[in-house]
Length: 166
Image (tube, rainbow, N blue to C red; front, side, top):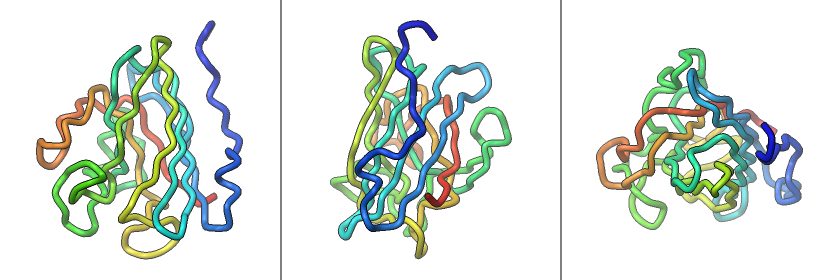
């Protein structure tokens, strides 16, 4: 991987907050190269997510979602099922009604590397029906249009991970 940033698995400083934490190690699905790590921290008013992913298509945005099953066994990420949606909301961006699993897209740089930090609402870490622990985490090949129901038309699943309690 000459020239590509290495994706560290250490907890970022933000994950040292007092709330429950979780982490997901993203591995490439069959025929893809994307891999990385996502950290989750429960805050009083939502969940902070910090993610680093390498091996993406350069200069492209990629859909990023939590899926209903923490199962990456299929090789193509399809074993994670649909988007995590315990409250029955439509698919959409964070500022509107949205699935619990809907997240902002990841924008890759010219080297195919993406790093982002954002806050999610409507989810938790460690308790309740909206708990992300045990769910699948997917990076998609294409951008999410935040309109097409119920998927956002984000294409193939190019990296898969399971969100595990920190």
